Image 1 (cartoon, one colour):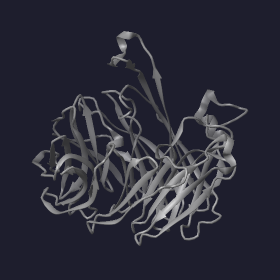
Image 2 (cartoon, helix red, strand yellow):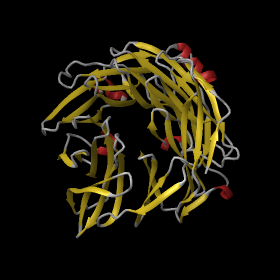
Image 3 (cartoon, helix red, strand yellow):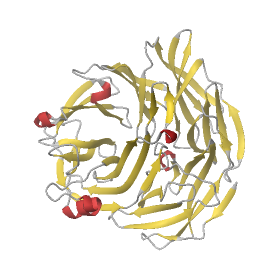
Image 4 (tube, helix red, strand yellow):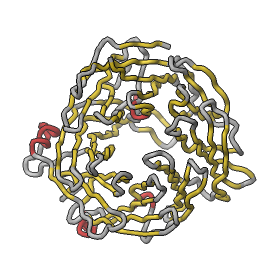
Length: 481
């Protein structure tokens, strides 16, 4: 364990206080090739890590100096256990563990609650699925306050099963199988959302094709905690969707969506759009479309800028950050994957029938659009970065977003290599930003996976560092001097 006070002090443009970062690094944990892990959170002053080692499930605690203080094996029910997710209580009094297990030929959904010491407080079996004929797909969505979960279980692609869970009550809200018309989950499902009250929104993409652009819309199926159903459409006018993200605004009781649109084809985005939907009166709600300013396109595309058809390619919506007034920040990132063949000496045979292609991963500029509640533009900024890696799944690329009431911090690796500088952008509500170099990983033996980090306080995050089956946990704390 090393506790490092960085000598480089960062000056935040909001206010006059000086902030320094304190890094606390744990000792290495040796991970087996079949081990999966989950950062539970910081509870009772300790960082908790759950390791899934197939037949063993180990909960490890680290103290404030990131020294391992204890470890215990959780005794879970049944066989063929499949961990789904852990959710730390926001009051710090414990965490919930959701998992599947098999017993007596049936598959069950189990919810357990633990205190910060890893002792079981409560346990309930939520669903008896019976016998799965195939291995089902699953996706999990959390409410903003993390008291509700929505589990999608898809065994038949035409019949998604939606299960709402109240973590505080340790009970089911609903368990319903939808069968939308002309629906195939792998092609048509876009996203789901669950509110703090437990209501569900299931979003289906319809007719996002050039030949059907006038019919393109999003179909939203709804289910509330009284088990009442509903449906409404979000028409996209004469535009096609390049990428989109939905988020429920619990403060303003709106289903919001921000995304990128194109008017010709899917080689590039022509602009961004924003829509605020009142679920109680959704009829006639249309997105507000804003073309990219020419200066933005030139800045991002550089020499690849197309004068006849200006736009930005390889751009994806990464996140929506909702504002208190009902507006939002639409955070996008340029990224692409390139598969390539190489000489036989550099390829890897995966079976007797073929080889695995080599893949290059590029994660570059962040483009942030701030919009007012009515969709009018507020500001736009480009946060430049350039990340490149090979054959690593891009796990060390992209960024970690740290939110607090005064600013947003985007933390990332400058370069994807063992000796690397970690940097951040600090952006305030007016769109003003600073870029700061935080620390260098030289001599620290760190390879930080920012996308897998968690925020545990307004000024603190926990990040995993993984290299050659060696795992370390790193806490980064901003201290006010």
